[in-house]
Amino acid sequence: MTVALDVEPEHTYPWIDAASPTHPSLIDTRHVTGELFGFVNIPMAVWIDETGTIVRNAESATIERSPLRDMDIPDGLDERLTRMLTEVKAIPDDAAAYRAAIVDWARHGAESPYALTPDEVIERSRPRGDDEARAAACFELGQHLRDHGDADAAVAWWRQAHQLDPGNWTYKRQAWTLVTTPQDATENDLMQGPNDVYDGNWLDDVVASGGGENYAVRPKL
Image 1: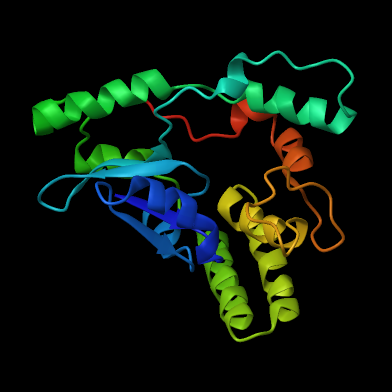
Image 2: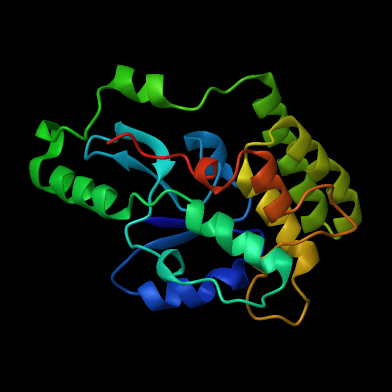
């Protein structure tokens, strides 16, 4: 099952329609699944067995190698775009190994070496401290205000969420895209560049966090 984390449901429709009717897809406008399972970026996943038990904690869940990784960066591009593509190419690629792990689990269930014990799941899970809990509350308050027509008031709460939980990219990317995507656009702005509303942006925050190699929560396979 796929869950789209997006406060604008219509932005998810092209992917949901493409997966229909064979793949169940849901939309989480309030990032509840992120709060419950520890999703801090996309794509991430947890594995849940037939008893409802989590057997693998939240981690990056790419199953196809992105063409961008093998693309030569053309000369003459804007400097910022060149830096962005460089960081994207540096994001670790575990797609083949992660896909193989899923297949192994589907075939062998609890006997799969990739199915973790409850203690291992807890040990590998992202810590949830006071700041992370407050950040989740701030994000929810911002979304509540936006739902009720006060998008400007939502900004202050989302800025707090970013400050309290700087490693949560879903909070940041959700807020950035709302101010960098033109209102008449049919797709989200993936560059999410500098803006006058929030302190951060995708490229500068990735560089500040140590570069693309530190961007994903890599699966320990």
